[in-house]
Structures are given as structure tokens and as C-alpha cells.
Image (cartoon, rainbow, N blue to C red; front, top):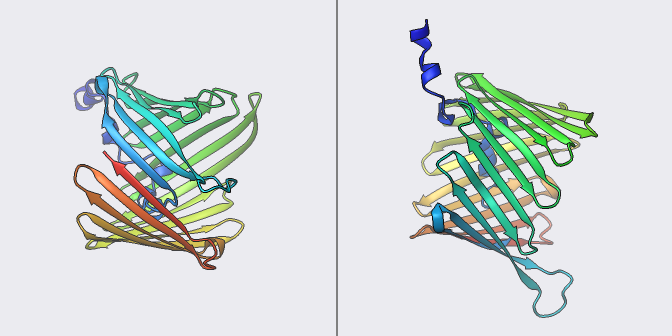
Length: 296
């Protein structure tokens, strides 16, 4: 028996061995298709290699000053972040400084125990969250605690069998270490060739979301969702890769009286891409545009 299962002791499992994602990402494929490339803002992101194996990312966003009545009603909002990975397993996932000198940091550590990844996210004012992710063949388990004010804690588990994924999570609100409220959620997903169907029940089973995606057409992906809370909303998106460098997306949503979103993403040499987007409400009273460029 020892020889049969000795690999469990001599070969620590790594994160790629689990068949199960983190619970919040089990329906990631339709969620990303529905949400990505529709940012109604103007920004430029530049990624480059820095000293000592670091990666530098600078993001500049054009922000409109609605209170400014002069000819210059826009300001540039810069943000700089650094990523650094050490051979010991410690990684600075992001050290970020904004234009107001507000600093935030995200770090991770692996190697403390097999299959375990520790993470920390915080800033210099009001946030300090310590979390973990444990990955095994049978399940992926996560946990998070607010160590700044001990006002919140989270936990989740995701597992399944074959093409079926199941999971659950709990968000706990605390006051002086006493539990004030707990929100539970459940999820179920089913993956078939070219098709994914998933459903969530959040907020103590009072909010329901169903998502689906299909990628069986050449160059075309489609997805949709239906959410029921105090009201019911639905959205459908289609993505068409008309050539290796150009991707078109169109989304229709019933929220806010009906909104149509469109985007075009064009890739260029040297890892340069530009995404243009538009958000058109059914009333046509406030059309929003976006243009986001990324280099690196």
C-alpha cells in the first residue's frame, strides 16, 4: 500500500493538478466574454521589464472633470505597479502607487506546504486581507480574513465529478470578532464539448444567476446570462474573430432600460493592442465611448 501511494509523500502536488477552479471562477468563460472589452474609459497601459527581474506596468487614464467649465476639462490619472517573483516562492504580485500617493500591495507565497498558496492584499490606509488557496485533486479550497479590522471573513470550496462542477462559499461580516451576518452561496456547472452551462445562488439563496457559453462555431463565441434579484435582467454577447488580429464583440443587455455594447480589439506587432468600445442606451441620451491601448 505504501509503495502504491508513495508518490503522495515524495512528489508534492502543484496547482496544475487540480481539475477544479476557485469557486468564484467556475463560470469564468461566459463571465469574461460578457464583461471584457467594454470599458467606457480612455487609458494607456504600458508593460516593460525592469531591473532585478521585475515587471513594470504604468497605466494612464484620461478622467473627465465634470465640475470644470474651462476648455481643459480632462486630467491624466497615472498609476504605476511593479511585479517581482523570487526563486524562494515569494512573489510581489503587485506594488501599486496612484497619483494621490496611495500605495497598495499584493503578495503571494508558495512552498510553505504542498498545494498551499498564501496571499496578502492591503493598502496604506484601510485594507489588509490575508488569504489562502489549497489545491488538491478532489477540491480547491480558499479562505480569507480581514486582519485590519477583523470585520470580514470568506471561505469557499469547489469540487465535482467528471464534467460536473459544484461549489459553495460563505461571506461573514463581523464586529469585534462577533459574527453579525453570514451570506451563503451555491454553484453548479456542467461542461460539454463546446458548451458550458452554470448557475449560482448567492446572498443566502436570494439572488440567482445562470450563465452559458458556446464556442462551436469557427471564430465565433457566444454567451449569455440571466440574473434574478429584486428584478430580472438578461444579456447576450457574441464575439467574432474576423482575422487573427481583429476581434469584434456585440452585447445586448436589458438592465437600465436596455443597453447595447460594442467593441473592436485590434492587435499589432510588438504586443501592442487597441480596444475601442461604445455603450448605447435604448434612450440614446448618454452614449459612452472608450479607447484602451496596451503595450507589452
